[in-house]
Length: 430
Image 1 (tube, rainbow, N blue to C red):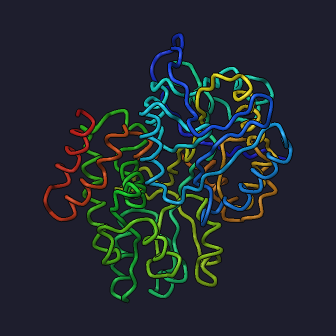
Image 2 (spheres, rainbow, N blue to C red):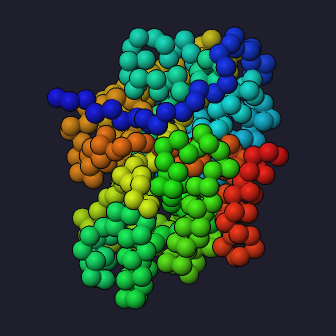
């Protein structure tokens, strides 16, 4: 049976040069609970709670870990239902020298920031153990290194298809999903004439304009090709993509400026807008929160071509890295490693993937996944001419954080698409 590798396959430059790791200077885990000879308790502020598609099964994983190590180790979850607030809280804690015992983060650019803080556990030796290293896609662990040291490792991966509501397209008389940006405009005009909103878009800084950032990622790839990020913001592709993104806002909901992920998901789940790029993890929520029959009407697409080039690509990146606070107590360090060993067991990851629609950086037997759309994403990804990172994963944190505000300025005609790109450049240089 074939092994399907669920991982971020987009090549990323390993951060900084290889060298001897510096000694972490600060200890953390301010809320940690330890007794001299008793149970060790680790705190874990966790986003996989509430409405998240992984919440139920991941919660069961925590229960199973606590049961397996009863009386020795215990993990306590702190619910984090607001992703934006969690990200801000995490950066504040780490900057103040107090990293949580266990935590996740999503931005590739934060690897350097957090690694330099001196507050994180060095996981390099643990991840190089034969049993652990063999669980991951080749080079996945190395790609998360800072100066040849792993202060984190990839866990959830993001593979981003463009999702079309076939029923809504057919209602407008459209029988084929567009394969190019030019065909997308025709689709949008046809749907708009029928009173149907084509596209899901947003600008909220709270979610870093997530859906719009994904559209921009695909447009940058279509305009500039596989190596576009290596050429920098001086490349005309970034301006062309900005022009196309601005045009997309002619075909979206009236509340798109200022909308966050909750608003956008609500439109897509309730068939108020027909097309939305998002990660495979949203499939679980489509089943539980979408209108009746929505899942069965979803048609998946890879990236659109532009001027006849760069069609069929997939946008992909790591959605969640695991990391841990540096511990002075060797027993606490062993507790963290035990938890990481547990949550990377292939059978546990398979259950999590199968139940949620999410994809992971741990190798599992994907032939038995129940979700046909999830299986299609994997197959299409393997057939893609190339994979490319999301815009947010390919630029610095400063640029990613400035995207939303610059986008709103452009949409309000306060700046041009070229000035939009200049805003991003300025953020990178400040």
